[in-house]
Image (tube, rainbow, N blue to C red; front, side, top):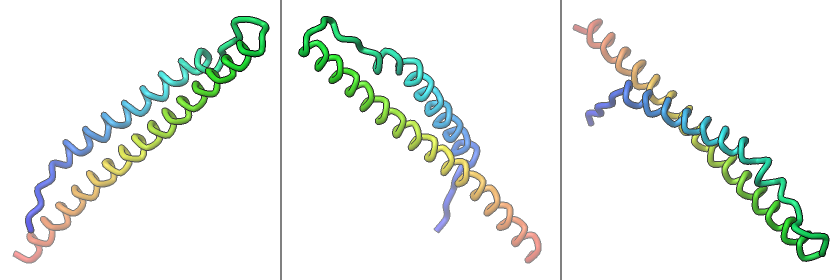
Length: 101
């Protein structure tokens, strides 16, 4: 089986994924004070419970965003490793052909 891989394209995709991951984390960090800092509109128990619910939703959102960004970062690392593996494998194949010829 012949496998043609453009390692430069895989590495470029890795860089793009790493950039998206960093951008997502930065946006979540910038939004964190607003998502976690909801104050009650009034002094009644309903306002306090509503503010607590909004803060909980904000915390949940930030948790999901953090997990998503981490997964994208891990994917970027895997792509980078794959690119390097293809380069080294191709180099070894070329050297094997040169020595055997």
